[in-house]
Length: 124
Image (cartoon, rainbow, N blue to C red; front, side, top):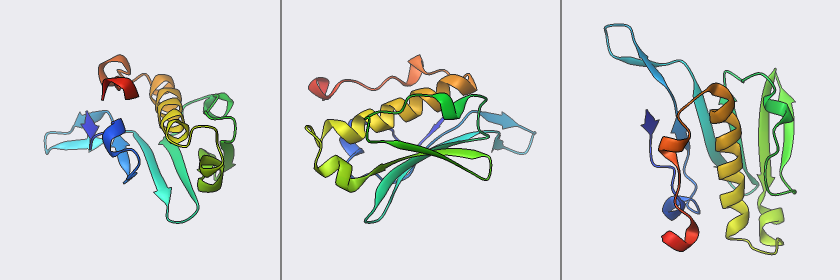
């Protein structure tokens, strides 16, 4: 189940995006896992998957300027706004970050990645 749209049309606005697989305890749906892609105002985009799948910190996150760090046993990827600004393609740079972070977290978590495919920029 996807909470909020994760598509390229609203990517540059970059409000928090959540993707999760729910479970039902008879009182409604509760989330067992979460993937967040959002921005820190004025500094960078970030992404993390909770709980962190095994080998998450080994996943390649695009573009090359993106960084990974492990805080409190929770790997997090970041992409600084300045790196986006000076990149060869400032529009594609955050898109690559979001897609690679989503595929890394959701793929390792065993989510239905193909069902949530995002069309290419040319298709929008």
